[in-house]
Length: 119
Image (cartoon, rainbow, N blue to C red; front, side, top):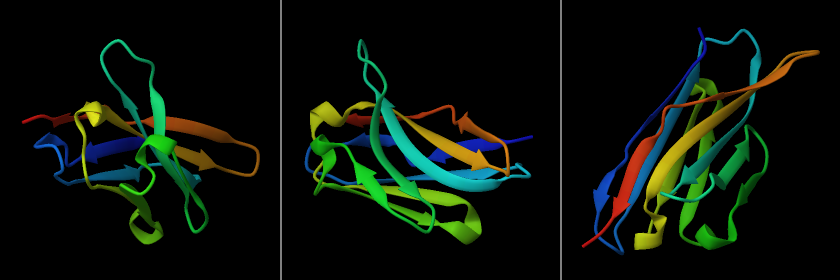
């Protein structure tokens, strides 16, 4: 059974830092891409940052220079280091894993972890 499990959310003051972790497991296919998305109340889910394992990264403009995504291929794990957090970063953060085989590609989502930035 494929699982994507996030951890590391919580409450932090403005200007503070958090690190989110996401582990993907259980697929017979190769893990190709992992990304962090977030959804604030009343808003659509949006991409925060993504990484092609062993390859490039991409970021939303709103987090560039503050957030860093990194991946550990051996552990099928991705991290999101979030610095200089702002109240507008408050959201549920979801991890997405993309698996690929010779003729198959599919996404699997985690259940989300709450990040609240407030004084």
